[in-house]
Length: 502
Image (cartoon, rainbow, N blue to C red; front, side):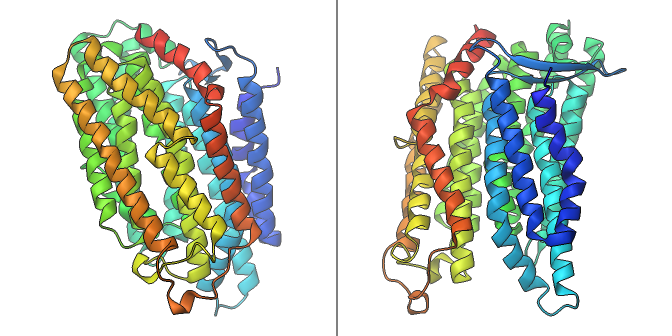
């Protein structure tokens, strides 16, 4: 047995100290080592995917007493999430090299032993980066509630240090805010996980799904899991940490958190509610749907009011999380599949946009929308990548965003009509109109940044180096490739969601 999944998760984890020492020895070497490690993990995920059919799965299991089995499982649900984590993590590891060298160099410009400090901090950055990626992969591949929570924490703790150590001027306060809000949700979630395991007599997913848990306890567990994970998904009222974190974190980490990490809460909601607590899941649909629609509209309206590029994308991310929650709230297999594909399309779109904003910051030294304009001529690749990112968020073909919205709203309307739920039908109509606001802030940013009159001080601005623009082009191509060939993901996803909800 080649143990591809174990390699994908544990090689980044085990080799994270090596990234630190590579950084101390040569700075940028840590970035290239991280790229090779994550590229290898990506290949292992793809090899694992080739081992199962559209209605099956591939798993690796080990004895893990007293908690049952330690397992890693790739199925139609975990495949899109694990692919996005490794793909975007790999691309951002390259993008981080020039960005973090520039940022750290400015911070230590007048210090003694400048090169030594630069190399050491790059080593720390990439070691934490690898730990966070390993935590994300382990979370979506876990087959055991305790194992899930351990990896969930491994995902969050390095992210806290990446924000508080490598962010901008208010990084320590914002890092603490990120830690408190995300871990408040994690602790509420932990209650549901522990009680589920106690009632099931074991923590394996299979044991919990087959356990004879009283219905009132199931409702309590579902409510606890929903509340805990909505913290992670930055749902309305639980979103306070997002604008601050995304604004203050270094841009590669803002891209990583917004594109793949935050949406993992959607994976956990689907896995826990539909696989483990299905009867309680159907009782929560209306509450989840209302909360989702409020999140969608609130985030989009706040995005329209921003003049800071990163804060605009932060509120956009909040709105996009609302769509993921709304697909889960459809109670229909098309809707849940749409929610998962929305994670993919939103991940590509937000990664593209944050990376484009990073390129703009590097080349212009500003992220104030009022200080920008007419940059399409100077930064054509950045402008094209930004437009493709926004097209994905708006759900315009040929991007993967179109496939995501089609599945999601088909599921929402079908779910309402199948049970003759007029309230859910109205919610679906309102949610559909929210896409207008997405188009609004997307076109607003494109017009203000890339078109119109270019400020005199920006007339000589040039496109970012190839090491910045090449990752942008790769992500843009993937966004269109998955839009043209969505079956690469849907063929494995649709049968699974149909099977669990039939």
